[in-house]
Amino acid sequence: MEIINLGVTLFNNYLLKFEKGCVLLDAGYTTDYPTFLKKIEKAGVKIEDIKYLVLTHVHNDHIGYMKDLLENTSIVPILHEEAEGRLLEGKNRLGDCSGFLSRCLSFLSKVSGKSGETWEPITLDDRKVYANKDNDYLKKQAFPLTIVELPGHTPDNIGLLTDEGSLFSGDMTINGFPARHRKTFLIENLEEYKTSWKKIIDLNPHTIIPCHGKKFPISDMKKYHGKVETIKLWKNK
Ligand SMILES: [Zn+2]
Image 1 (tube, rainbow, N blue to C red):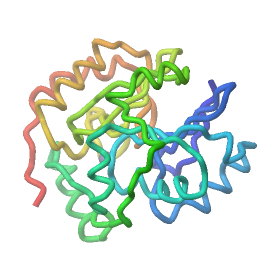
Image 2 (image 1 turned 120 degrees about the horizontal axis):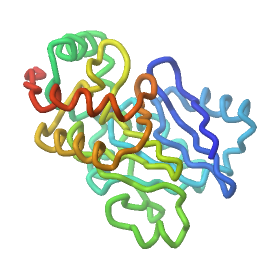
Image 3 (image 1 turned 45 degrees about the vertical axis):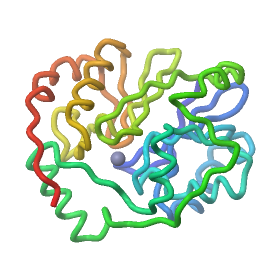
Image 4 (image 1 turned 45 degrees about the horizontal axis):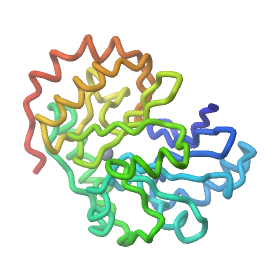
Protein backbone atom coordinates (compact mmCIF):
# COMPACT_ATOMS: atom_id res chain seq x y z
CA MET A 1 0.00 0.00 0.00
CA GLU A 2 1.25 3.46 -0.90
CA ILE A 3 0.03 6.51 1.05
CA ILE A 4 -0.31 9.78 -0.87
CA ASN A 5 -1.25 12.92 1.05
CA LEU A 6 -3.28 15.27 -1.16
CA GLY A 7 -3.93 17.72 1.66
CA VAL A 8 -2.51 21.00 2.86
CA THR A 9 -0.44 21.77 5.98
CA LEU A 10 -3.05 21.13 8.67
CA PHE A 11 -5.52 19.01 6.75
CA ASN A 12 -4.47 15.61 5.46
CA ASN A 13 -6.45 14.16 2.58
CA TYR A 14 -5.10 10.66 2.09
CA LEU A 15 -5.21 8.57 -1.04
CA LEU A 16 -4.31 4.96 -0.40
CA LYS A 17 -3.00 3.15 -3.42
CA PHE A 18 -3.52 -0.61 -3.62
CA GLU A 19 -2.85 -3.03 -6.49
CA LYS A 20 -6.55 -3.21 -7.40
CA GLY A 21 -7.32 0.50 -7.08
CA CYS A 22 -7.31 3.44 -4.69
CA VAL A 23 -9.22 4.38 -1.56
CA LEU A 24 -9.71 8.08 -0.86
CA LEU A 25 -10.15 9.25 2.72
CA ASP A 26 -12.44 12.26 2.95
CA ALA A 27 -13.06 15.03 0.46
CA GLY A 28 -11.67 18.34 1.75
CA TYR A 29 -13.51 21.67 1.51
CA THR A 30 -16.14 22.52 -1.11
CA THR A 31 -13.68 24.59 -3.17
CA ASP A 32 -10.96 21.91 -3.21
CA TYR A 33 -12.17 19.80 -6.17
CA PRO A 34 -10.01 21.43 -8.91
CA THR A 35 -6.94 21.19 -6.64
CA PHE A 36 -7.77 17.56 -5.87
CA LEU A 37 -7.93 16.75 -9.61
CA LYS A 38 -4.58 18.45 -10.20
CA LYS A 39 -2.96 16.67 -7.29
CA ILE A 40 -4.06 13.17 -8.33
CA GLU A 41 -2.86 13.85 -11.88
CA LYS A 42 0.52 14.87 -10.50
CA ALA A 43 0.56 11.64 -8.46
CA GLY A 44 -0.09 9.63 -11.63
CA VAL A 45 -3.55 8.49 -10.51
CA LYS A 46 -6.55 8.48 -12.83
CA ILE A 47 -9.86 9.43 -11.26
CA GLU A 48 -11.39 6.12 -12.37
CA ASP A 49 -8.70 4.30 -10.37
CA ILE A 50 -10.30 5.60 -7.16
CA LYS A 51 -12.79 2.90 -6.22
CA TYR A 52 -13.92 4.04 -2.76
CA LEU A 53 -14.42 7.25 -0.82
CA VAL A 54 -14.32 6.57 2.91
CA LEU A 55 -15.91 9.41 4.81
CA THR A 56 -14.43 9.52 8.31
CA HIS A 57 -17.31 11.78 9.48
CA VAL A 58 -19.53 14.65 8.39
CA HIS A 59 -17.81 17.99 8.98
CA ASN A 60 -17.39 20.64 6.32
CA ASP A 61 -13.61 20.13 6.01
CA HIS A 62 -14.12 16.42 5.18
CA ILE A 63 -17.10 16.32 2.81
CA GLY A 64 -16.47 19.38 0.60
CA TYR A 65 -16.14 17.84 -2.84
CA MET A 66 -17.97 14.59 -2.10
CA LYS A 67 -20.90 15.74 -4.23
CA ASP A 68 -18.56 16.41 -7.20
CA LEU A 69 -17.09 12.93 -6.87
CA LEU A 70 -20.48 11.23 -6.64
CA GLU A 71 -21.83 13.13 -9.64
CA ASN A 72 -18.79 12.72 -11.89
CA THR A 73 -17.51 9.25 -11.09
CA SER A 74 -18.72 5.76 -10.14
CA ILE A 75 -16.93 5.94 -6.79
CA VAL A 76 -18.51 3.97 -3.93
CA PRO A 77 -18.99 5.98 -0.72
CA ILE A 78 -18.37 4.14 2.52
CA LEU A 79 -19.68 5.90 5.60
CA HIS A 80 -21.31 5.34 8.97
CA GLU A 81 -25.09 5.03 8.85
CA GLU A 82 -25.34 8.09 11.15
CA ALA A 83 -23.54 10.19 8.54
CA GLU A 84 -26.29 9.95 5.94
CA GLY A 85 -28.76 12.26 7.70
CA ARG A 86 -25.99 14.74 8.52
CA LEU A 87 -25.02 15.01 4.86
CA LEU A 88 -28.56 16.25 4.20
CA GLU A 89 -28.38 18.89 6.93
CA GLY A 90 -25.88 21.03 4.99
CA LYS A 91 -24.08 22.40 8.03
CA ASN A 92 -21.81 21.21 10.82
CA ARG A 93 -23.10 19.84 14.09
CA LEU A 94 -20.42 20.92 16.51
CA GLY A 95 -19.80 19.35 19.88
CA ASP A 96 -18.41 21.01 22.99
CA CYS A 97 -14.74 21.96 23.33
CA SER A 98 -12.17 19.58 24.82
CA GLY A 99 -10.18 22.37 26.52
CA PHE A 100 -9.65 26.11 26.84
CA LEU A 101 -7.49 26.36 23.70
CA SER A 102 -10.03 24.52 21.59
CA ARG A 103 -12.71 26.86 23.02
CA CYS A 104 -10.62 29.84 21.78
CA LEU A 105 -10.10 28.21 18.39
CA SER A 106 -13.77 27.46 18.03
CA PHE A 107 -14.58 31.10 18.84
CA LEU A 108 -12.04 32.31 16.26
CA SER A 109 -13.31 29.96 13.56
CA LYS A 110 -16.85 31.17 14.22
CA VAL A 111 -15.74 34.79 13.97
CA SER A 112 -13.88 34.04 10.72
CA GLY A 113 -16.91 32.15 9.41
CA LYS A 114 -14.95 28.91 8.83
CA SER A 115 -16.96 26.71 11.20
CA GLY A 116 -20.21 28.06 9.81
CA GLU A 117 -19.46 26.93 6.27
CA THR A 118 -22.47 25.27 4.73
CA TRP A 119 -22.85 22.83 1.84
CA GLU A 120 -25.55 21.83 -0.57
CA PRO A 121 -27.37 18.80 0.92
CA ILE A 122 -25.85 15.55 -0.33
CA THR A 123 -28.25 12.73 -1.16
CA LEU A 124 -26.77 9.27 -1.51
CA ASP A 125 -27.86 6.74 -4.13
CA ASP A 126 -27.71 2.92 -4.16
CA ARG A 127 -23.92 2.93 -4.23
CA LYS A 128 -23.70 3.80 -0.53
CA VAL A 129 -22.11 1.28 1.81
CA TYR A 130 -22.62 1.53 5.56
CA ALA A 131 -19.29 1.13 7.31
CA ASN A 132 -20.99 -0.16 10.45
CA LYS A 133 -23.40 -2.59 8.77
CA ASP A 134 -22.30 -3.85 5.38
CA ASN A 135 -19.44 -6.09 6.51
CA ASP A 136 -20.46 -8.92 4.18
CA TYR A 137 -20.35 -6.60 1.16
CA LEU A 138 -16.94 -5.26 2.16
CA LYS A 139 -15.63 -8.80 2.66
CA LYS A 140 -16.96 -9.90 -0.72
CA GLN A 141 -15.29 -6.93 -2.40
CA ALA A 142 -12.05 -7.75 -0.57
CA PHE A 143 -11.99 -4.19 0.75
CA PRO A 144 -8.35 -3.85 1.80
CA LEU A 145 -8.82 -2.05 5.14
CA THR A 146 -10.57 -2.74 8.45
CA ILE A 147 -13.16 -0.22 9.55
CA VAL A 148 -13.14 0.76 13.23
CA GLU A 149 -16.02 2.70 14.77
CA LEU A 150 -14.64 5.55 16.89
CA PRO A 151 -17.54 7.74 18.05
CA GLY A 152 -17.18 10.70 20.38
CA HIS A 153 -15.94 13.60 18.25
CA THR A 154 -19.10 12.84 16.27
CA PRO A 155 -21.27 9.69 16.42
CA ASP A 156 -20.33 8.81 12.83
CA ASN A 157 -16.54 9.04 13.20
CA ILE A 158 -14.82 5.96 11.75
CA GLY A 159 -11.19 4.94 11.50
CA LEU A 160 -9.34 2.63 9.14
CA LEU A 161 -6.82 0.03 10.17
CA THR A 162 -4.26 -1.10 7.63
CA ASP A 163 -2.75 -4.58 7.38
CA GLU A 164 0.60 -2.98 8.21
CA GLY A 165 -0.77 -1.82 11.59
CA SER A 166 -1.43 1.90 11.10
CA LEU A 167 -4.72 3.50 12.10
CA PHE A 168 -6.24 6.44 10.20
CA SER A 169 -8.23 8.00 13.03
CA GLY A 170 -10.47 10.60 11.37
CA ASP A 171 -10.83 13.47 13.86
CA MET A 172 -10.67 11.14 16.86
CA THR A 173 -7.12 12.43 17.39
CA ILE A 174 -5.35 15.62 16.29
CA ASN A 175 -1.61 16.24 16.39
CA GLY A 176 -0.76 19.86 15.77
CA PHE A 177 -1.02 23.28 17.40
CA PRO A 178 -3.21 24.23 19.21
CA ALA A 179 -4.41 20.65 19.93
CA ARG A 180 -2.90 19.18 23.09
CA HIS A 181 -2.19 15.60 24.16
CA ARG A 182 -3.37 14.32 20.74
CA LYS A 183 -7.00 15.10 21.74
CA THR A 184 -9.58 16.30 19.28
CA PHE A 185 -11.00 19.85 19.60
CA LEU A 186 -14.71 19.17 19.62
CA ILE A 187 -16.56 16.37 21.37
CA GLU A 188 -20.24 15.54 20.95
CA ASN A 189 -20.25 12.66 23.44
CA LEU A 190 -17.50 12.55 26.07
CA GLU A 191 -18.19 9.05 27.38
CA GLU A 192 -18.09 7.62 23.85
CA TYR A 193 -14.90 9.58 23.21
CA LYS A 194 -13.17 8.06 26.23
CA THR A 195 -14.32 4.57 25.17
CA SER A 196 -12.97 5.12 21.64
CA TRP A 197 -9.62 6.25 23.08
CA LYS A 198 -9.39 3.02 25.08
CA LYS A 199 -10.50 0.99 22.06
CA ILE A 200 -7.52 2.30 20.07
CA ILE A 201 -5.12 1.48 22.91
CA ASP A 202 -6.54 -2.06 23.03
CA LEU A 203 -6.27 -2.43 19.24
CA ASN A 204 -2.63 -1.37 19.59
CA PRO A 205 -1.81 -0.13 16.05
CA HIS A 206 1.82 1.01 15.91
CA THR A 207 1.05 4.39 14.33
CA ILE A 208 -1.91 6.77 14.42
CA ILE A 209 -2.50 8.93 11.35
CA PRO A 210 -4.91 11.81 12.07
CA CYS A 211 -6.68 14.04 9.53
CA HIS A 212 -5.13 17.10 11.16
CA GLY A 213 -1.43 17.17 12.00
CA LYS A 214 1.37 14.64 11.90
CA LYS A 215 1.27 10.90 12.53
CA PHE A 216 2.39 9.71 15.97
CA PRO A 217 3.10 6.44 17.83
CA ILE A 218 0.48 4.54 19.89
CA SER A 219 2.66 5.16 22.96
CA ASP A 220 1.39 8.79 22.90
CA MET A 221 -2.19 7.60 23.37
CA LYS A 222 -1.13 5.47 26.34
CA LYS A 223 0.85 8.42 27.78
CA TYR A 224 -2.11 10.84 27.50
CA HIS A 225 -4.84 8.38 28.51
CA GLY A 226 -5.11 10.05 31.94
CA LYS A 227 -5.57 13.49 30.31
CA VAL A 228 -8.49 12.12 28.30
CA GLU A 229 -10.10 10.54 31.36
CA THR A 230 -10.16 13.95 33.08
CA ILE A 231 -11.40 16.08 30.15
CA LYS A 232 -13.89 18.74 31.19
CA LEU A 233 -15.88 20.06 28.30
CA TRP A 234 -16.23 23.81 27.63
CA LYS A 235 -19.62 24.76 26.26
CA ASN A 236 -19.33 25.72 22.61
CA LYS A 237 -21.69 28.68 22.52
ZN1 LIG B 1 -14.38 16.87 12.58
